[in-house]
Amino acid sequence: MALLLLIYVVALAWIAVRSASRIKNVSDFFVAHRGGSVWMITGSLLATIFGGSAIIGAIDAGPVIGGAATWFMLSGALGLLALLPFLPKIMRVRRFTLPDMIEDFYGKGPKTVASIVIPVAWTGVVAAQIIAAAKILQSFVGMDYSVAAVISAVVFIAYTAFGGQFSILRTDFLQAAFIVVGVVLLAFFAGRTPVIHPGTVAPAFPFNAHFSPLDLFLLLLTYATTFTSGPDMFSRLFCAKDEKTAQVSVMIVALVMAVVGACIGFLAQYSATLPMLGDGARIIEVGKVVLPHFLMPVLCLCLLSVVLSSADTTLLSSSIIFTRMISGKENDDRNEIFRTRLVIVIDGLLALLIALVFTNIIGMLLLALAVYAGAFTLPILFGLAGLRVKPKFISLGIVCGGLLALAGKLLPQTSVPHLGDLLLVLAFVVNGGLLFLGRVRKAP
Image 1: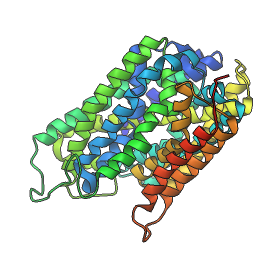
Image 2 (image 1 turned 90 degrees about the horizontal axis):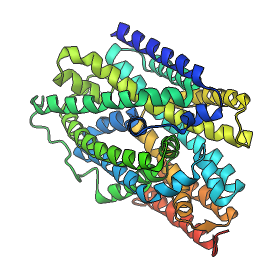
Image 3 (image 1 turned 90 degrees about the vertical axis):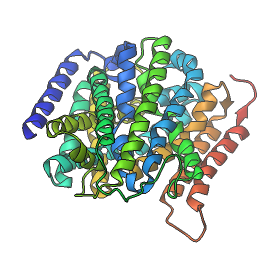
Image 4 (image 1 turned 120 degrees about the horizontal axis):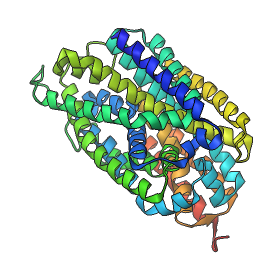
């Protein structure tokens, strides 16, 4: 196992160095010169979506929500399909980052706010990937969690900083194929293996005592919407060579997400019947029970690949956004690439610190995504729909929506039922209200 991991890391280093040699300007580093094919964009979207925080975290939640874990992928697929009507506009105005597009819609003020809030929220998403990778190493090789988190973060940071978008697109399709095959294979063997505790009743799909229709509504509101308006989704689409490529990729990805989501829900239910033998990921425990021994190293490499492919995309997206804010203009200045690499290192280290303190993958992921959704979903959809809003109302809506969503996720249990849920809904209501108040009747 250790030898395979070493070969894996060496291969990544080779890809990163090769990719770095192709980088001649900012366009190469940020969007791979906008030359992505259907398979490259499809693979990159899948690899980003099938992050360790989505798959490992959902199966870890099996004892609590069971088959309802299917909703993570199904709701994400619905959010992604909601992008289809907006693709023509996205591909016409595509830039390097989502805040660049927000500037096209509303001006520099909202862009600055977005360039601060998005990297902060996305640092939490990167932390979720580090947590997932550390749990994989912890389960397979018995490594201490803290050591595993540090090693994972170093690999994420180095690979992203060296190769930029070229290295990400070159490996994402293969990594996505690994995880699809791995999850389907794991579900197949689990279906053929009797549960250890037959008397255990796992929570069922679609709803159960720990996952209600209200929970689904909140998941659609704060999670699915990030697939419609998330910077990672846009960063993949900005690399596509044309609108048709982006459209076909989105439809393929949504279909694959539905299939993988069903497998994840089944595996979450199956994992609820197993005793937890350690502190690692439950998907590994399922693998140990149902897979032939010779397939376990393959499962390990597949899971590490997917965690990496999601982490590097997220880390690169947030770092580019922050760098664009401090550089202020589009150019091919080599100094801008250097600044981006420096931001990648700093952002990755901050995510590592978070991962060393918090170890709940799904909790960290949903916190970061809820803040983002409350702040940006409505402003982005307004802009794509051709509606215009005064810049100060956009900025105020982003800040108020994000803060209310953050309060809703962090609020401890109180005597007021569902107060946190109410604040999450209120984030969208307040944000939308401010946008309507600031609407400009005639687009400039």
